[in-house]
Length: 224
Image 1 (spheres, rainbow, N blue to C red):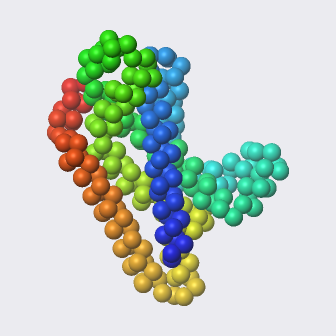
Image 2: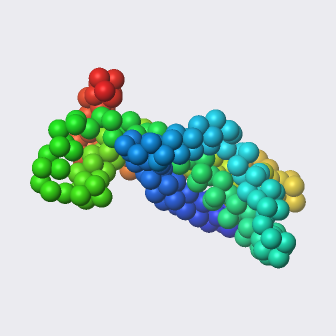
Image 3: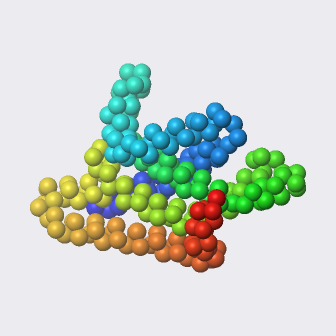
């Protein structure tokens, strides 16, 4: 059970960071003035958002190694923690599509004058995003982004389908070997509730610290 908790935390932290980075890149591409980048970003979202996350876990675990040279495929299939790696990749590409949608909404909520002001100060395209646009994007998107990350945490349980030894898989193993499924399930349930509660508390605290008015964000998104 302890190993299951550790693997679940590894999946959560890894996929949260990686999907946030990838989702940010895709969101920027989707609002780009370059048609090729915008088309690629839109295509990515449409593909990964409209196919169940479980499919991507199964794809990267069962199919992806077969697409590689035989030697590399054998190394992946014999790597002890490949189910965890496949889980991280599958959850990342799935969650990133939703993250990009949320951040794109945050970008569209920013008044055009903000970017014009950044341009007038002589900031380049990259500097505009780093110093002006990205901070406001994340601030505007924090409430739905936080909710999405909690959902991603719950999706880590899907990794049991590819034998990643996270807490749901560990619970099943304990029940099979010791027939103490009630106790194991109770512990796993408590773990999910507590960690999700901690994540929600952090999000609420950040909203208060940043003084985010959800109603005003919703109104600005509707207006845009």
